[in-house]
Length: 250
Length: 227
Image (cartoon, rainbow over all chains, first blue to last red; front, side, top):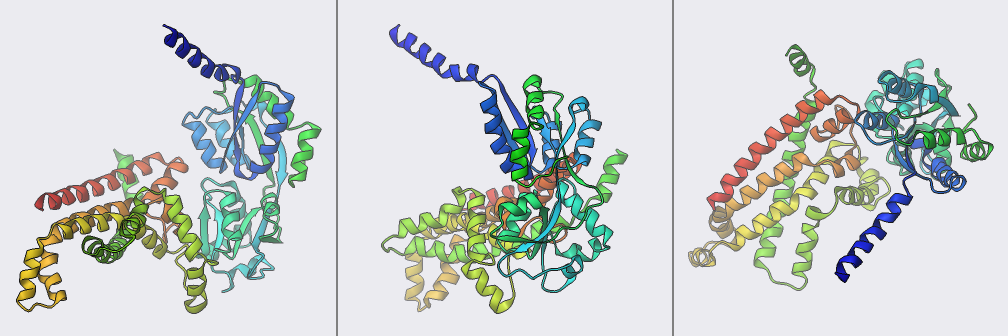
């Protein structure tokens, strides 16, 4: 009998944290937001005692796919409007909660050590550049921005044999930082994180500005907290962090 | 029905061809190394043998990411082997289908090694001794007596290795990347299709892979029961 009651209280004690942490939201965010959001998550939790924020970082297209398949996500932050538009079309997010909260820009980077010394987009066609890392155009927003820029310069088709398609912008960054490719297209905020290993050689202007929309996921069970998280992005404290990581104001 | 036909017509079969090619070369590589090592582990006694054997069996249990990382560190541009190959031959296995071959061979090696080692151990040593008394050279004994007696087991292991190489994903992805028309194997094409939400294409590729693997496994079982 005593053992049973002990066991029971043990089970209860173990279940307690579950009950206490009921106020939890999962934020699916574009890979480029990784570092800034981790810091903002801690800050947000400090302002809301009892609330916890979990993050799921990947390419925006992959996140959309997960939400579509019914992943329990409360907030979706994408690195381009195209992906969020798809989410709206498929009625996966609450359109009323959608807002742009940061901007970014596309940059061409090369390894600091032994880079091919690219100066212009045209230089990418040279023999010194063997492989160029880009995001997969189907799922990774930075890949789509890259395609827009290279299409505009009539370089997409000639450069295509050199492309290595990465799963997210952070994988592009990693390939360049390791020196496995001679060049890659990422956001300026990513380049800043690996400032010692990669250098920005060019900031081409994108036909579509790089803006990040955020919205509450329709299936969310914690909509109030999810809305609070989105609202928090507009506060001075949050914008200060985002600016520090190199993001622009919308 | 019509959509199925149009889907099949528009399918890109390059990944299937590449997977078969990569798996064939990887199996060949694993077979050569596995036979040699299998024979050594079956016949030779030396200090540290069990530890060494465990090291070669590691790819069977390690996550593919560890294999991929290891190859990147060794054969990447700044790795010892990679830097040497680059300066002397301007060659790299990174982002090249050869990289997928190396990754798949490493992962498939334990399967050949284990079955070859077991098959060699199962060969009656007195038959080899008899051949030796008939003035056969050691190589001749190996080729005419040992190998013919051990081959069903070896072949079964080789088929398993081929199936494993066909299914390789993680390490190959890290080393060779998923470049359409260059390094995108069947398993990577499935991954990309799922990520992009092309579920019907993924399904077709999954069925193709499964059928292929079942065929190979059935064949492998036949040879194991031959022993």
